Image (cartoon, rainbow, N blue to C red; front, side, top):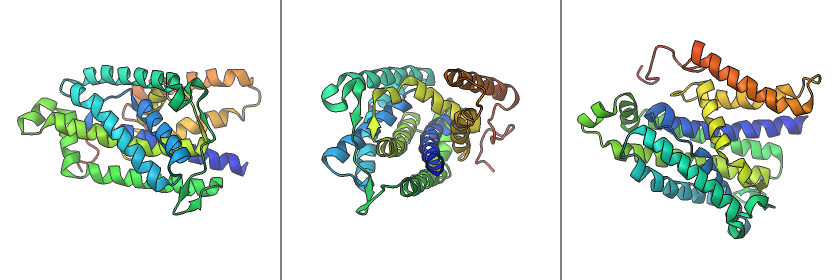
Amino acid sequence: MVGYILNLLILVSISGILAGSLNFIIGYAGIYSLAHAAFFGVSAYTAALAAMHVSTSLLVTIPLAMAMCTVLSLAISLPALRVRGEYFVAASLGLQMIAFTVFAEWKNVTGGLGGLTGVPIATIFGYELRSLGAFLVAALVCLALVTLSILLLVRTSFGRSLRAIRDNEVAAASFGKNVALVKTLAVAMSSALCAVAGVLYAFHISYISPESFTIDQSVLVMAMIIIGGTGTVFGPLLGALVIHLLPAGLTYLTFLPARDIASLQQIIYGAAMVLLMIFRPSGLIGRPLLKDTWSK
């Protein structure tokens, strides 16, 4: 039971990083992306391959994965962000589809649909994170650092520029904001922060396959943000907690057939999203009448 709880908390921490990094561009810049699972996957495969051939240290794998995701983000954001937001959504969807195909077909590197197995145990300062408790501490530290980074970023002039672009892109440009540059940097930062989650996931699961990085994963992360509250620092974490606790709670309903739990879970997710859009469109901890969370 203790192991199950520790494992659940680790997954919540990883999802909290994922949702927080996506919320950085959705909530503060108004940039909607369907490619977050692609960056998640690139960082996970990068960490796994680096651990197998270079180093198992988080101090090596995390910066390497962040660099890979940053470069990949530039490949999509530089051309797509010079136009309006709906084009970026289309471009991000294309990247997601390409990434999944590469994960599934580049068998010599990714292992194909069979995935990569036997990812070594993560280390930090030479200490092996062998136990779930030790890994949870590392995951919580990473979550805290990512959350703090986002908190500091949105309170800087760069964060104010993001919110200005989100609220009125034309007006922001008329006041001298380099809209394309600011949005490109935002996507790069979001992708780099997302890489932290991918590295932790690879080491925690010790097995990665393309099935973990589909469009469904991107939609699920977006659901976490909407449920918790877009444009808030702690909303995505709350959303991640809800998303993970729901299936965990359903397993205790012994009168439900196991085969029906997944379907019921999807129905509850959908109903929750609809009800939130009707009664609480800003999310569970969003501010209903305040567009700019940090303006006061």
